[in-house]
Structures are given as C-alpha cells and as structure tokens.
Length: 409
Image 1 (cartoon, rainbow, N blue to C red):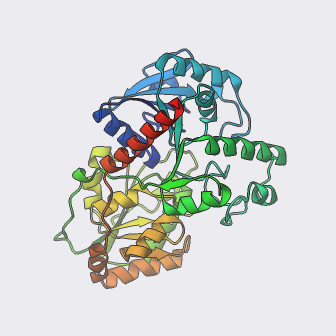
Image 2 (spheres, one colour):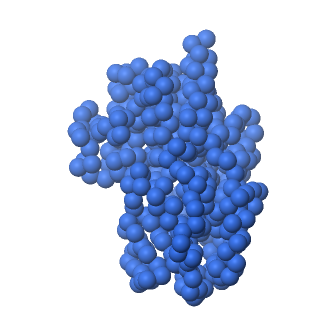
Image 3 (cartoon, one colour):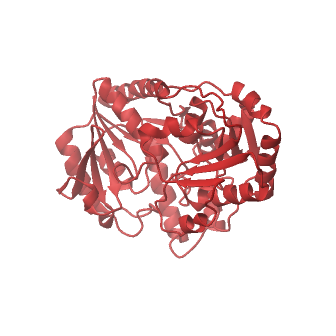
C-alpha cells in the first residue's frame, strides 16, 4: 500500500512526541513493505529542506520522504481551523494526484485541515489518530482562557461561554465546530491514543466508534537500569522545555526541597522564544543540570542516568511518550495529577500523582523520596509492561487495509 501520514509539524524542524510516534510507525510500515510519505507544515525557513517545488518543500528524514506546506501559504487562521484556504487545497491535491495514495493517516490535524479536505475530495480513505484535543479545542489542551480546566466543549457551547477573544469569535467557533465535526465523522477509523482521550471525544461524538490504541515504544533500545554506586537520587525531566510542561514548577520545588542527597537533570530544548530558558538558567548549579536536547539514539542512555522521571505538566497530557519510554527504562514517575500519566501511575502504583502546579506539594514529594529511597524500589517493581512499536504498527496496518477495502466497495 501507499500510505500518507499527515501531521501538523515534523522533522527536520520538530522532534517532539507526536513527531517521533509518527516516524516510528512510518518506518515500521516501510519495513513491512509499504510505501510511505509524510505531509506536514513547515513553520520555519526553507533552509531546513532539500528543495521546494510546486508550492511544497521536500526532505528525506531517516529514510522517510517528507513534504511540507510553507506556513505562509496557510493564512492567519490556520492554527484555529475555521477558514478553508482553497489555494492550499489545490496545491496538496496536485501532490495527491501524482502519488495515488491508498490510505492516509492523520496524526495531528492542526494546520493540516486543507490537506484533509483535499484527501476527502479525492475519495482517499483516512484513519485519524486523536493525539491531542485540537479537533474539539482550538486551545488544544482543554484549558480555558482563564486557566481553568475545561470538562469539554459541549459542541462549542463551553467555548462560546469561556474562550471568546478577538480571533475566536462566535461565528468562527461555529464554523470550526462544523468543519472539524465533519472531518472526524468522515474518517474510516478513529483511534484515541489513550482512554483519557477517548472519553473526552466520545462525549462530543457519541455516534463515532472510537478505538483505543496506545503508542508503542522501541523496546529493543532499552534495558532495565540498575542502581548506581552513587547513592544520590537523580530527579530527571526529558522533553520539550515550555511553560505548559511546568519545568519552572519542578525546578523551584527542587530548590525549595533543599535535599542534600539528590540532584536534578533537565534535558530538552525550547521551540518558542518565551524567555523560559533564560529564566531557568539562574537555577543552574552543582545540583541542577540543564542540558540541551539529546539525539534520539541517546535517549535510553539519558534515561538510565535518572532514578525517577518527573512530568510536572500544567495541562492534561493525552499520552506522554516520555513517560512510557521511562517505563521501558525502568523508571518510576512523579507526574501532575491531571491527564493520562496520572491515571497510568496511580492505576499501576508505579509512582505518584502530585497536585498540578503546587510547588510545595512537589517539594514534599521530593523530600519523601530522598528520605526513603525504598519507595522507588517498590514503584519500580510495579511498572507496567509496554507495547512495542511493531505491535502498534501491526494494528494500524489492519485498519489501513480495512479502510482501503471498504473504499473500493
């Protein structure tokens, strides 16, 4: 089969969790004999790309062909999703006409609604994976404009009551709800990356059949860690550095804990210029290390240097590849008490869910573990088994075949 993966951003510009999940699945399908390509949006300059032709940028990343629509073509409301850009639809349609894809797999629809419109117009069946809440929340994370957690958009009613601004007018919100509802309802298969995501979407789309398929991990890259001779505990974070991820909360909590037998490792890069990295620099010292993003091949080694993984996110995470890679490396976790990571950790008793954004609570959790490291040994024994990337790709292969077959009837 010829499979097109559609995602809001991708390598070589971005390398976060959804991007890594996508390339893992694409490469596995290549090994299974399928022809794959990725269609994304380029939000940076053309220097990241090999060439630009017929309105699209192009590169090959880890053996996977990648096509990208330059962000400047999309218009001002691309991240919101209410307006259709017919020019971009026609540009993407030419790509589809050249390549004759059997099926598409939408991994993230933000900035890519024109691509989905073109796919629908060509009658190409598509599988849609709900990797976050963009399809029901223009703010993406179900956090209202005033910072409160949203229980769900209620077909846009909650948005109109709580999240109206200059761009998100009532008319645009209604247009967005109509457009995204049609896209979700028209998918041949709709998959949620966790039970947490499925429950939220099922409330909005009660007539859509949702499957839950968790992301897999490349387990052969990991081995269960052993305790180091050094008795100090290492509290670690690996991933994107942003305010939404709560890194500032974690570092302040560690400083307030003032424990002598521990240190902190923060590994990652920032994709936004919000000044956070500069703010964090003042905390750098013998007990707090700030390291740049490491290559993908070095992530297992980086995780092996931790004793406990910390995920202090201020927004509800829908899955967290970092959490599951940490599990593969044998790491228990401290996580914020919202979203899927909290459910996983509490269900398995392999860590602790700490009140979100509460610096004192995070400090207390750190102090407790330093006072009694045997807690970590118990948590480590409870870590659940992880699905492999190959298993995830196998199930998607079945969905692709089912969707392609149904489209020919």
